[in-house]
Image (cartoon, rainbow, N blue to C red; front, side, top):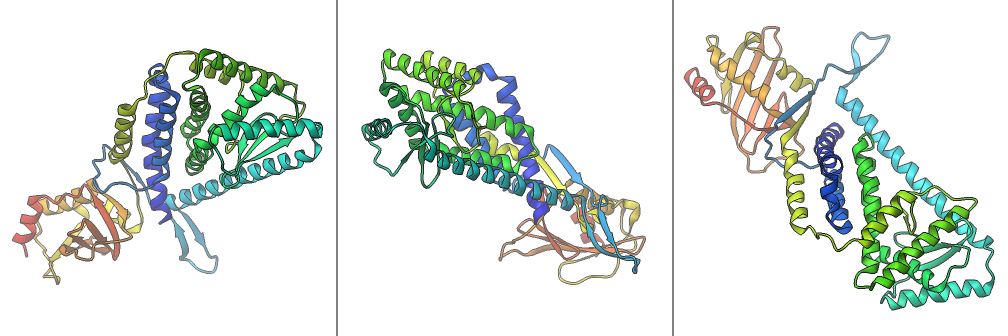
Amino acid sequence: MLSYVFSSIIEISLVVSAFILFFTICIPKRLVRYSPKCRSFLWIILAVRLLIPIQPRFRVAALQLTAPYQLSSQLQVTSSSHNVSQYSFMQIMAFVWLMGVILFWTFHIVSYKYFEEKLNKGRKTIKLTKEQTEQLRNVFYETKYSMGNYDSISLWISSQAAGPMMIGFFHPKVVIPDYMIEPNKLSMIFRHELTHYQRKDSWYRFVLLSAESLHWFNPFVHLMAHRSADDIEGACDCTVVQGKDEDFVNSYIHALLDTARSLLKKKNPHHQTALVSYFSSSAGRLKKRFIELMIPQKKKGTTFLTLCAVLVVFSTCFIFIQSNDQNLEWARSLSEGDISAIEFSNHRYLKKNTALPFQTKHDIVYWFGKNGFKPSFYHSKNRTEEERFRITKNDGSEKTVSIFSDGSVRVGGKEYRAYNRWFGNEFKRNSKMHR
């Protein structure tokens, strides 16, 4: 089961990586023509696809990769000459991948909780007077209610905050550092952070981090997360200034600059965490945000996003990774000269065919070699057995193969799902001729 999920993760990761490379390297200037909101939706489409390790049954694999079974780690017992346990190459890699996912999530969750606790402790060491604190709170609630937001959102004033930010999922909090800001600029800061809440950007970041965790081995997924962080802030900025006049936009830009200038004076700035939305950014990111605010309205990209969603979903049909086990490795190593006998039957075995034509052997070898197989964890209740045959090799080893109407295959007693299943007419004709 784990190796099956891991092989699907690799398939999806490879396909989505191609899209990320295309958007970030091949057409970056064309992508900038679309609004930050459009680009944010593009990244979330890719992230959601990365999170769903489910492939359609219809597969037209232009690229087929096979993870061999013989690359295995065998646990030996000194008192016995036989293997106690044997792990395939994909099983080992799947275990390593799972450990990476757990460590990735553990690191980010612990970092987030530590960061949140640090901010909470900083609330007790603020340098503002009671009157100043009350003034900040009044501006916060005035801005909150003017936006029509009556949800339970707390305001934290912390000496440990490097800048304004929004944290929390079920109990959201706007956090600001312990220094005074002009009321009009402070109102814009609160408006920005509350817009993050209304846009559900914390959950957006959670989805992206989840995609990063499942694909921690893929640098292109981390690149996508980095680009999406810029577009989240840009989309939030555009939402704040939407419908506002030029004076408001200029005041908003000055608020960004003043906040960035104040951050430089902080003695103990903290590193940003992936699950937190920050008001200000680095110099490079600020420049991009200013450009987004000053240029005219960009394309919404509805058609573009629809096309991308369809392509991302169905393009995974063109790559197939098969993880061989003992049955599939046995079948994969088949050649016409290895087959000593084949017995055919619908319900019971018939007499061994000692004069089996070469074409029948070739069709069976071709079928196993060209089709892809994945472990099957379910099957149709109404399926019927279309064909059953037993293959015997020259070394005496044999496997029984059953083909069912729902596309599932049983090899050596284990269920698989066959993709691009092909059984040529010549094979059918030969099998009937020699029964």
